[in-house]
Structure formats: C-alpha cells, structure tokens
Length: 248
Length: 259
Image (cartoon, rainbow over all chains, first blue to last red; front, side, top):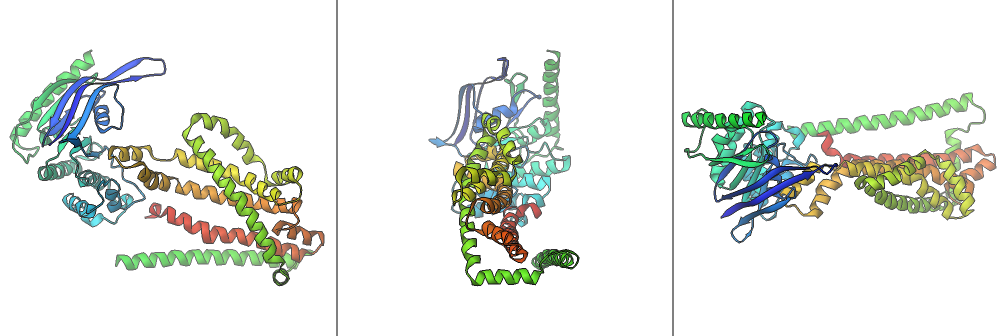
C-alpha cells in the first residue's frame, strides 16, 4: 500500500535582503492507500510548493516527507499545469521517456493512450495536438509509469470549461480503474468535490485550515445534487477563509 | 493517402531546393560570363576549370588540398572542443559569463585577416600558423552559440524529468542534446565559414603549401586563371560542406519544428 507521509513540514524562502518568508507552516498530513486527496486554498497558500516538495523537485527547509510503497520508495507520476511534453519526440516516445521499467512499456502506454482517447495520436508530435490533447497525453504519461503515488498540479487550469470537464471525467474513470494514491492540487472547488475522497484546505501562510471528507458515491458528475450541495458548502467555507485572509 | 501526400510534399520540397541551387549556379555563371565580356583580364570559366584539371594532373591539387584540410580539421576540432567548454561554462555560470563575454565579443570583432597576420608574425612559416588562425577565427563563434544553446535548455522539461525520476544520462541525451542541437549546428556552421577564411589567409601570408599558398602562387605569377581556379576550389568546398553535410544534419536535428 502506497502512502505520502508529511511530518512538520516547513518551507521558507530568504530574499536578498535576508528577510525570511514562510510559505509552508508545519504541515502534518498522511495520505495512504487508494485515496484521492485534493489540496485547495487561496493564492499564496503554498499548494504548488507543497506538491513540488513532495515530488522532490524543491528542497524543504525542515520536517520530513516520505513516499513509500510497502517497504520500498514509491514510484511517482506527475501531471503538471502544462503538459511538458518533449516537442522533438512523438507522443509514444514521450510516454517512453519517463518509463522506469523498459519491458512492456509500449503496451502500458497504448493502454493509457486508449483510456484518454488518443491512441490514434501515438506517432504525432506535440505541436500537432491541441492544448487539451497535450494535457490528456500528460495524464496518460503519468499513469503509464504505473505510479504508486500520483501528484497533480492544477492540470486543467489552462483549459476551457468544456475540455476540463471532459478531462475530469477521463481522470476519474482512469483513477477508478487504477486506484492510485493521488495528491491533487487545485483552486477549483467543483473539481475537488467531484474527484476527491478528502479535501485539504490550506490557509494563507501555508498551514492546514481544515480537512473535509467527501463521502459520495462514484462516478460523480458536477450536476449531481449531492455534489452540488457539498460544493456550495465547501465554497462557502473557502470564501470565508479568503475573506479572513483579505481582512488580515 | 497520408503517406502518399507526405511523399508528394517531400518531392515537391526537394524539387524546389534543387531548382533553387540550379538557379543560383546559373546566375553565378551568367555573372561570371558577363564579367568576362565587359571586364578586363577576367579569365573564362572554361580557362579556370582547365587550369584546375592541369593542377590535378601534376598533383598540386590533391596535395595542397589534403594539407589544407588537415590543418583545417585540426584547428576546427580544437576550436569546437575549447569553445564548447567555455560556452557551456558561460551558459551555466554568471561569473564565467561576466569573465568571458566581453573578451569573446572583442574576438568576434577581429577579422580573420588580423589573426592570419598575427599568427604569421608569432609562428612564422609552418603548419602552426594556419592551424592557430583556424582555431582563433572559429573559436568566438563556437563560444557565443554554445553559450546561447546552454541557456536555452528548457528548465521545465528538466524538472519534469526529475519529478519522474528519469536518470541524468537520459535527461542529457533526450532533453539537453536535442534542445542545444540547433544552436550547436549553427555554431559549427559559423565556425567553419570564419575558420575557412582564416585558413586561406594564413596560408596566403604564412605557409609554403596549401590552398591559400597555391592561390597566392598564381597571383604572384600574375596568372589570373590559376588564381581563380583555386578560389573556386575554396568556395566549392565551403558550399559543398554547407549544402551537403551541415544543411541535412541541421534539418534532421530540427525536423520536429516543421511538422
């Protein structure tokens, strides 16, 4: 069973004048098993920084982060805000680039390309695809490494509403099939409610404000009444938090 | 259908470029012929080619060409190696950039003829003069283009690779190398052009063999057909290297840009 264990995590930046700014403030969080956890919060609450530290892209100032899959280190998949595909490689080669186990990766890649509806684009270059298609390739790439832990940083934020809704449905379908441990950063409450088992709300300054359990049946649609009710409730809390942040 | 249209596209593209080369050749020959008719003491194309054939028959062509190529390859290889090291350092380190950028800008501004004269004075007549001139003429172009290429490595793709735990060697091979390929080939092209000029001049002033020396031999003998024959060799080699070797390599390395 995979897990993300974050213990007393602190991240501080020091500017040229020596002024220290704390962007993550003693976060303790454990995500384990087949759980889809969304991290939401207003701008400047450290969502992306938290994800970058968890992935190892960014160093932490103090505390501890461990990604485990049983007794070994967890294999990580990452979906970025933009697709980050190698423009000089075909779609298939892009999926091959991040593979740890080279044997049989083509079959895995084709399987996930099929799941995102782009198996016919395997030999195309990224420049030949739309933004939405590139992002679907990014999702397929992350799943095709068979990750124990999947990290996603606002993957639909650059897309139009229709495309992002379709991609959310794709994502939920793939996740229900593969059941990875997911940490999903978003500023979109609708997205968080539709996709998550738990929503972690970060407050400005990078501390956990509250954790909301989402106990709704899957697959979910944004138009489901129960989803809409919870969404309105979370949104109200989120707005109260933003208002408190602005007043402070 | 897609394969057929792709072939048609390629054939059309090749047909267009072959047409462009033919048109360029014809215009050069026409201009030359015009110069023969209206000019004073301009040898004809046939006279110059005849002289070249004679040079080949008496062994001067291949002997001098081989010597020049040897010096050129030595100097260019040194310029590429040293230039790549300095360029990468400048691309990665602000300190190295500050240390070398003005010096390199000054070196870029120095014409090849100055290097040729300087090396002749430093090293006299011998193999070192053309080799060092080739090195000094080509080096600044390699440095400036490799530094530019190093700065152009896409950091977001490197971070993506790091997030997926891709080994460094594969990052170098599949992100860094393709990202710098275009500028690296541009570096080689500019270096070849500048260094080739440097070679001719260095052999003109400071050698007793080679393409430049042989061109001067006919110039001193006041035989313009011989002089032009060797200039033709000089130009042809440069054009052939660019059109048939570097051009296709550049197109291959950057083929993804034209999809």
